[in-house]
Length: 244
Image 1 (cartoon, one colour):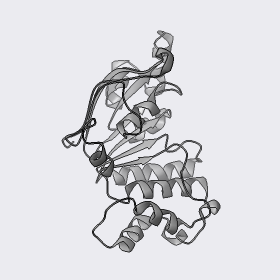
Image 2: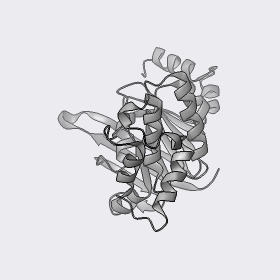
Image 3: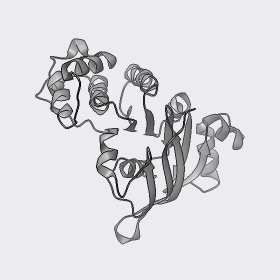
Image 4: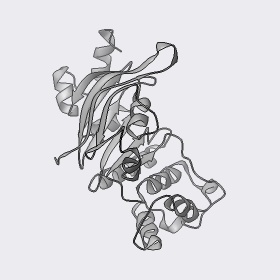
């Protein structure tokens, strides 16, 4: 299972007008693990991920990543994490190679940069498309490029925000296979509202509703605890009880 790499205690985010987006949640993530944050749209998943990735300031609570405290060591934390947003932030008029090269310059790297880019593009199956303009890529290829950019500096933690949203079944399957490979070297924290995705990929997960955790554990443990056949049935049961 590996040792602890992320520890979150009483994490809270309150926006204007007292809107509580995340309500005092706590959880832990282990190295070489895919950790899922599952919940419907508007449940607080992306807000949690953005706080973990140092994009958004928490209102309260603590975050420790690889022994580094969020409030004191943000710059060091950023150098050790990768982030894949819901919407790809790519340069459409640059090639695949040029995109990854531009983003790579943001990180210090002592090795051979060209060899590193080649290695990563081969890993995400984009080497043969390295000279293709991004505007000509399919949705699945663009997502794989976003992942390549996020891992180019060999981060210890990778954050995925709804990484397969809008992709066709083949592209989703390719991303799933890539996530499984990436966890060999990094911890992965991913948000999703696809229950089959959570069941297939996540070693542990939390289910979020209105900013609060309603379930925490391995997918099978959660389904057994709710006496359900799968996570979809868990969500249905909780909804009937009025908690979602």
